Each structure stands twice: as structure tokens, then as C-alpha cells.
Amino acid sequence: MATKFGLSAALTTPFDESGRILLPLLVEHAKFCLAHSCDSVTVFGTTGEGSSIGSHERGKVLSALTSAGISGRQIVAGVLVDSVSDAVEQMAEALDAGARNILLAPPSYFKNVTDDGLFGWFSAVFAGLGSKARDVIVYNIPSVTMVKISVELVARMRAAFPAIVVGVKDSGGDWAYTEHLLKGHGDLAIMIGDERHLAQGTGMGGQGAISGMANLLGAEVRAMAVDGKDDRRITDLVEVILKYPVTPSVKALVAHTSGNTLWLNVRPPLVTVAPQDRERIALAFDQAFATRAA
View 1: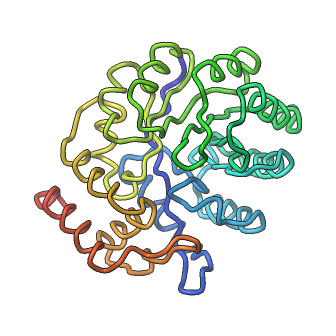
View 2: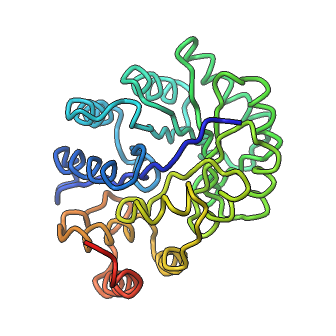
């Protein structure tokens, strides 16, 4: 059985009005998440607008976190690129900084690719890293990449790279797939990205979560992802968020709960959630968590 992963906040990235990363605010927020029931923070993921963050900026983010006393073992680094060489470069930088895990998405520009093609891509990345390759969580998020990581491909990569591929983050939102993955891979840390399936998945051996909701509801999400306790408040809130662009909506909630409107800023091509929609999202949160302790 894989070591329990726990809870990682899919960290949102704060920008100023010009789109520059606000490193002090990012560090402050990472520390907030770690102090509120998260075992780690995941930077450069989908919620963190990772595909909009350049290679030169990634090093600055990692340096800011580690310089502020956040251990590399508390950092998971997302890699969301198409080029093998870019993936190798970004992974090496994060691993050299001591990152706990790499969250590695498949290449997403080419569509209708085969398992053989994907296996070849992942194999080339691992070969490029050489002895540095370790602790990779394969990222299944077909709604974004348009590429589904089949359960069969997971098994093939696990067999070929048992010392490298240690887990899967499943953000597909397809319970039948998640169930198949959980039943077939007790040897991997399976993290469920869709909070609506968290408690059920944990009961079947899920190892935790990399969660956008953990940006503001760490204790509540941890109870689902680690203890297997269902929480209808969170699942209902997720249903509301899914009516709007997800990443700007999560940032709107962080802005609402923190009182800092800088969190509303996103980088193109994303746009900030419209004021009336922000009000609806905030109302859903307030109604669900009105009695939540400050």
C-alpha cells in the first residue's frame, strides 16, 4: 500500500493588476493553507494557472517558498506542458528544490493520441530526467487536456517505472473510472480531484486529495479526503462553482473569505468572474458555512 498522501491545497496564484505574481502574498497564502490542515501545497497546477506561468517565474516561486521556511517536502509542483524537453527542465528544477512530488499532466495539444503514444511521451520524460526521476503523480484531467489517462496506461507505467510513478490525481469527475482505478491500484496513491467523490473514494482506499477547496476549507476537506467523512456543504458548493469557470471562481472565494480583492486577478486567457456571479458564489459559501468558526 502506498504511503498516505494526505491533503494538498491546489494553490491559487495571486497576481497584481498587471499580471505579475505577488510572491509575498503567495507565500502568505501557502503558510495559511499549511496551518489549516494541509500537508502540502501544490503550485503550478490547474487552479494555480500553471500553464500561464513561465519557466523563469517558476524558479522564483519555488525560491520564495523555500526561502520563507516552507520545506520542499511540503511542495508539489505541477508540470503542464507538451514538450518533453520543457517537462524535463521544469521537473528537474522542482526536484532539485526538494519538491515532494511532481504532478505531471499528459501533453494536450495533440488530440486522439493512443496509449502507446502517451507511454512513449512519459517514457521520454523519465529518460531525460535520468536518476533524478522520482515521485511522479500522473494527472488525469481530460476536461482540460482532452486526453484521458486510461487505467490500462496507469498499470503499464507503474509496471515499467515502479520507482518513479507513485500516484494518480484523478480530476476526471467520472466515478466509474475512479472506482476502477481505486480497485485496481492499491499499490498507488490515488488522489481524487473532484470533491464530490472524495469521501466515497477515501472509503475505498483513496490516499488523499489535491483540492482547490483546500485554499479556504482545509479542515473540512481533510475530513473528507483523509477521514472519509462526507460533507454535503462542500459538495453543494462545488456544484455551484461548476456553473462558472472553476479557477476564477475559486479565486473569487479566496478573495471573499480573505477580504483581499487582489485574489480576483487572473491571467489571460482567463477572465475574472462577473460581479453578479461572484455574489452568487459568495452567497452559496456564506449559506453553507455561516456557522463556521473564524
